Image (tube, rainbow, N blue to C red; front, side):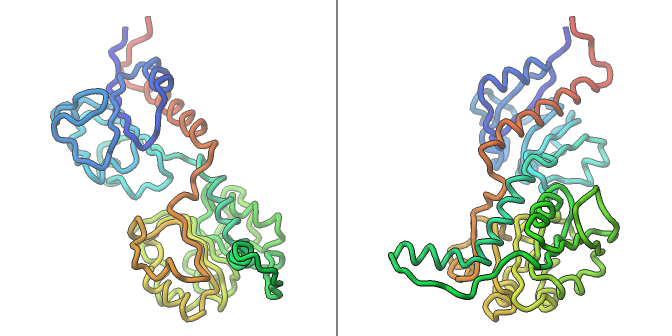
Length: 327
């Protein structure tokens, strides 16, 4: 009989007892750590006691921000990491590549709810939804005559991965001209874009776009990509929607562009510091929608994400060198 594979699961995903048993049936010995934000040092697991030295035995980990708080080098046997996030900015990629550790993110598991959030908030801004919500609360009947529409607008999507492609497909149904922006400026993955541009052409694209969607990962190159200089290039009155990572935007520069009227509005689900500090001017701006990093959430996420975790762990178990055949 095969030796069980040591597996560390964290509270980044809420497993049911049945789901843990399903993973153990694949050949894993699962240990659960509720709060991955604490440093593992001694006994701190809900369902098992982990001694610091025992970290060296885990071959697989399912987590989100575990390695922001724990040195990955302590996981000496680690060979597979399954993230519960789409971004890769919370793991030490250089070390992972050096050690040949397999790494998987959630792929397109969150793409649909994130694209729906992006479209919803763009429409909220265009259709003056906040003003009508206020009028309903006040039982006030007052027509607003200056209301926009998506049809005929031009949108640029920075990052044409899973989320960017889903946003593009939904915008096309509203007769929006879509410019896909990626590294090369070449068509990518069958995405429904009308035009393509490279990051080197970004300034010109921003000047021509009514809607700006950020759907690209946070890297050294994209940190503060939208800074004061670049925000000064946007088409006056443009709307900016960000569900990617907060640090892609320079929030101080963004606040200035919104207050000056250069940007017509913004919908923001991610921020440089989360929770967004109570003294941030973004909270009180009438032309800003703030949501607490929930664009990826859907009632369908749990089943979708567990299937992905289970299937990727199965592939890892089946591909382990020297694995024993089942009895």
